[in-house]
Length: 333
Image 1 (cartoon, rainbow, N blue to C red):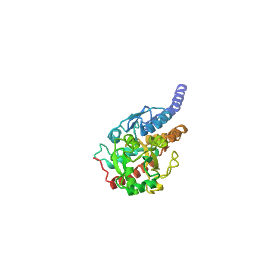
Image 2: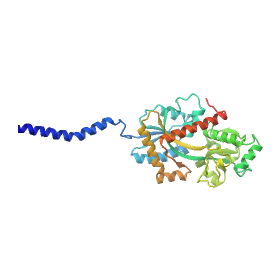
Image 3: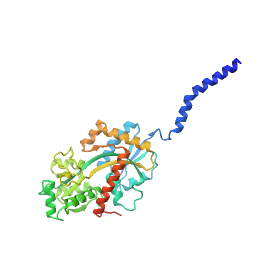
Image 4: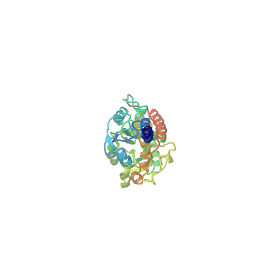
């Protein structure tokens, strides 16, 4: 009898001791298999060559996020096709939270509204993660032009339709659409000269072979500071802290608002909790004093939106650029 009572007591204690382990086992079964994300390096595609503006922003943010999550974020530069090659690769990648694309407005919006026969669905194949950064473009002209400010430039080009030209990074690019919106709202006829990238435009602008360029503020800052080009306006509704004396375009053209932005996307079926976690890590990264300063020094505002905020903004931008492309009759095969 005593032995039986002792055995029952032992079984009871073993049951009690086993309960926490059993509970942990049940919780583990209830959690998704990727709950330990990230457990390995993350790959983030940048649809541009190394060293460009978008690539630099991606690397600054990725460096900080890597420290926060304890896993490296490997930047894969995959240029070509105006960003469509990188987009297609990410659209086909496993939706497991280990592949992302660091897009700009060009790849995420302009391609969707100007390009036919894409090898992926530019809307439904991606999950918006976060609006990573935003900065103004700047309208610059050759300093030899008699126009000293935006109003004088508009008046000059209205009086001489077809005489002046602007360079762009190519037909159907965000720079092209930004300039065509300027033509429309300013009621000017500045002739488009497409190049293979804005870097190729700059020598001709400095030499006076083209008269105007709308480009990112960071790459034009040194030319503005040296007086090699004259900055007439930034393309956002507010002035830039980097160029406080340069008016915003909306001061002369109230409907004009064309910021340049970057954002992170994942394959469409990436688990929601991973998308939200990555967005949160980017928000913490761009708000960290060191990263915020690095971005601000280049004239860039770190954003770090929620996925829901970015989805709303992205779709609004699709509407804006679709209207510009349609009114300007810009469509690519």
